[in-house]
Image (cartoon, rainbow, N blue to C red; front, side, top):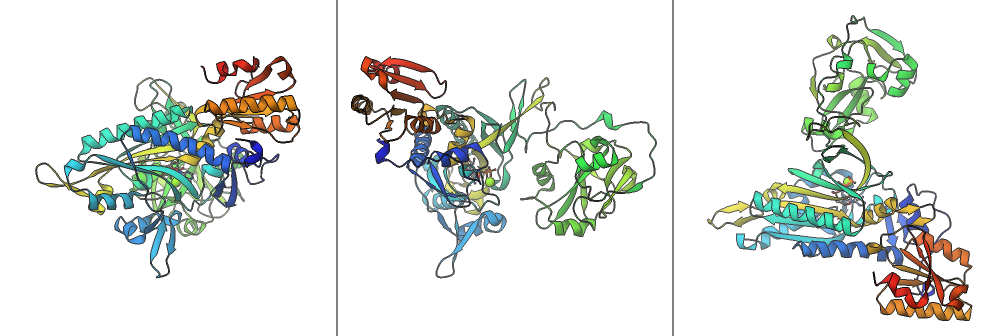
Length: 565
Ligand code: ATP
Ligand code: MG
């Protein structure tokens, strides 16, 4: 491809709303442009990058025996009403009406459509197992679309759905997808971990997430230093039930109400009252929209709302709104405490045995000191906190957790019969009995994988794209395309590479060499060839984008470097 005939509008500056490096670089490299919050146009180079990832995903899905199809983006409400997700999915589901006032949604995921299809088309055990997949645009009206393609509202996903006769078969299908995902992320040359995950709104019995490691990742994961067991922090079990440091001989003191004007966070309370965080109990009010629960955790730990959701057996969980907090505590948020609360209270084990601790007074600008368990109603204890570095591994006896940050690029679920029951997806088995089909579902965010690749592979000058997914392999850079000799050699190399099917971008622009060097680094293709003065000696420079190693090579021997090895 000739730069002058292509369209790569690079920018010197990143846009003001771009927070993370992948977002900044994809805009600067002319890969994407924003249309609205979380909605982007893929410019030619961005599309080429996305297609490379899609192709690897498609090949590995096909290799694993999955069959490609394409479902509609627009889904009639009735299907989503049958599974009741129409009522539970919340505002992320973009609902629309047609001219006849009939409701539809823009699909955020496609369990309903595919299960409905299977329920109509698949009748016999002879047609099972089967796994259908698609690569398609999804829409989720995320509360906070941000980070470019990382968390968009409209985004491309590969979603696959497996259908099996029995549990055993479903586990084989799951394992096939697990292995295919590992191959995909290995082929993309990404450093990743597979972690046990919570099953979230989709539900089901177990699930794994594929996390690309990056310091900027939104997800926190734990990995055991000994056995390698990994889990999403949402799921990571904390075994500890006793905290010996909480226990002491100190006598229980009478409660003291203290004025704490505008002092709300644990940090501030600890400083203002000069008590360690381990002597403060955090009270956090959570809701599923209908019910409310107050959760207690020691001040130096964080509450894990997914664990709370599971203990409460809720489908969904939110931090309570200011209004709800006022209803149950009689105070604005920041002053909640367990005494006199008008809702159920549950506690993390980390507060067991504490004495003379600080809690919110359920009154604006006040906290209570020297509170003890006898001062409020009995509570149940559970594992409700986030794991921290050093917590014991639940799978092996010697290991402790280490914490990493990651970006969730893939997610696989074993669904069981959750959808087949609701949509009546059954088959006639060998024994003539009608049975429910056992399902699994498997997603990869294509755009998010592109963004995660850049988060993991960049330097101060730009992207460093792994060869298998880089839009071009070579950036061919004549330092002065107006120089006849340089132009002739550059054109020759260009033709030669093209003939060898090596994807090459020839920077034939009438630009200063400095500008071209900057753009080449920004775009981050694996190799750059500088065609400059040395052509008179039959030589060019070959630069490795990742290592920055510069090799002077003979033009005649370019192939030794670019396709022979
Ligand atoms: P998250 O927790 O990040 O919101 P999720 O659990 O909602 O993700 P899934 O429903 O499992 O995501 O979707 C499958 C895959 O689709 C995810 O692993 C991710 O790669 C991708 N994905 C999900 N939401 C988005 C989004 N808003 N923008 C881009 N990709 C997304
Ligand atoms: Mg989500």
